[in-house]
Length: 249
Ligand SMILES: *[C@@H]1O[C@H](CO)[C@@H](O)[C@H](O)[C@H]1NC(C)=O
Ligand SMILES: *[C@@H]1O[C@H](CO)[C@@H](O)[C@H](O)[C@H]1NC(C)=O
Ligand SMILES: *[C@@H]1O[C@H](CO)[C@@H](O)[C@H](O)[C@H]1NC(C)=O
Ligand SMILES: *[C@@H]1O[C@H](CO)[C@@H](O)[C@H](O)[C@H]1NC(C)=O
Ligand SMILES: *[C@@H]1O[C@H](CO)[C@@H](O)[C@H](O)[C@H]1NC(C)=O
Ligand SMILES: *[C@@H]1O[C@H](CO)[C@@H](O)[C@H](O)[C@H]1NC(C)=O
Image 1 (tube, rainbow, N blue to C red):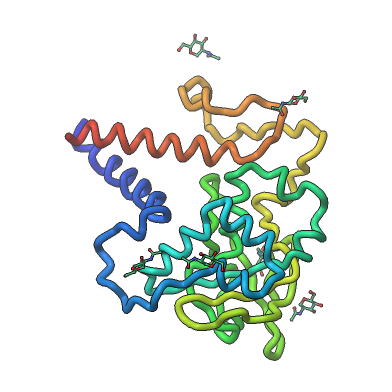
Image 2 (tube, rainbow, N blue to C red; image 1 turned 90 degrees about the vertical axis):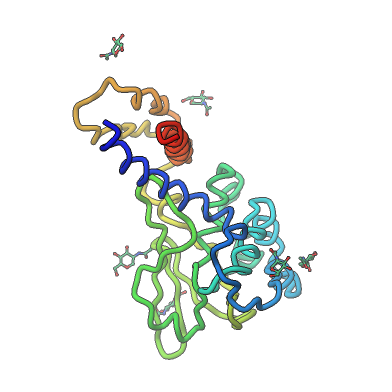
């Protein structure tokens, strides 16, 4: 019993650590100070430019700005941010952002961030799709595709494609590029029509065991207000992790 539960626990705890590392990276004592480049102020960089007020507001309200600045402090990879202009947000259908849950807003913002520093030339050479900082517990990839022609680079979310115009900053550890469209991830805005059509609440693939406690966490069918799965999954992982600690101690 204990012999089999220990590896499961370890795996779970590793997963847990992975999830938490996003938030707590600054506190981990491991990284041996990779040449502190001085604090990078992402919102400051955007603020100077004057046409990113919506994105700044989102970065701040979702706490992603803090997260990025902390992570940059200890990152050896650096980061790349695609900053949609105010015009880009204004061109969205009304309510596009406000209809998202807070967690989906976090995912949307993180979708505009790559966990690595890329110059424009680097972006021409990446292999697609490139993972973003956004993650989906239910298997969503949240990738971006980059294509180039000459020295012009396009970025595509699968739903929108736009040119990368203007490098607001291109110095390690942080690259910031202006984009004139909000990059809408398929994971949030794809196929699944958010209106009407009570789409069958795909509770397939549970392979038989219908009456387990897991079934209790299925959302009530009908209102397809997304974002629930990841919350449930996170809670599940957290719970498992805590249970494991109990087992191990
Ligand atoms: C970053 O810049 C913003 C806007 O310029 C400013 O309000 C904020 O205090 C700065 N943060 C840090 C840590 O310097
Ligand atoms: C980044 O690290 C420096 C020293 O290594 C520290 O003074 C600064 O407060 C840190 N900034 C953040 C945002 O954690
Ligand atoms: C990226 O390109 C691949 C194949 O070229 C395609 O399958 C995938 O859907 C694209 N993803 C996005 C986010 O555009
Ligand atoms: C880049 O996207 C624009 C539309 O925003 C399109 O007109 C252009 O053909 C694309 N270029 C490449 C290299 O895909
Ligand atoms: C599920 O199990 C509970 C008891 O654990 C039982 O009362 C209930 O009828 C079961 N439901 C189904 C659909 O089998
Ligand atoms: C769920 O949908 C029903 C109609 O289908 C609606 O009356 C109800 O307000 C919705 N509830 C939520 C929480 O959106």
